[in-house]
Length: 210
Image (cartoon, rainbow, N blue to C red; front, side, top):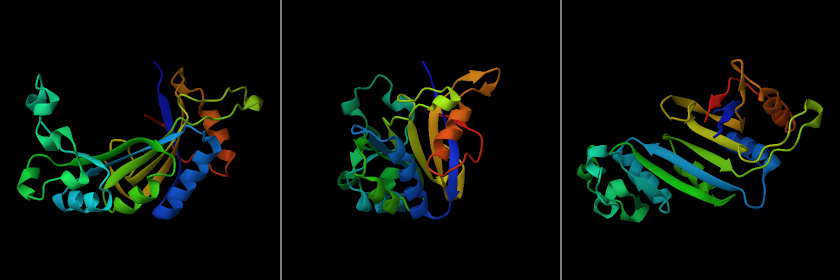
């Protein structure tokens, strides 16, 4: 079992610039079978309904108490807990009591199929775009082999944490590599620096386990 560590490499309040920068880094490692996942947390009924109109293909799921579903077949879960597409979401605000935040997710899609629509739809909510199944090249001058399993790029939207628990007025691009901790230090951090330098970026802060 291994983990990846994500290093911030670019931060800006300009959403278009953040998305274009993330794409530039992603394209450095993209493969034919690379995929993208998007995720957002919507903290009000108004935001859920607005997002559902703009991103009807999203899968929306509300918060729940695990006692509601423990030992209960999924087909018997409340519809908003099991997950609904945008057009199937209820209009009655009362249905959302105790269900906020509602998450919106689309998983494992082809590169370029959802990023623009998601970035346009997210508005003030927090979320992320994650490009996965990439391939980072070898860095023979540093004696580092390339990455596949942990080669990813993320774009944090309106937040600075993966958990979306720290709202921000800007967006952060992250580069992922394998975490190899040796004596309390990340042994592959120089590789992360080398990778982003290849596309004209720099690591701007400490890594976060992902």
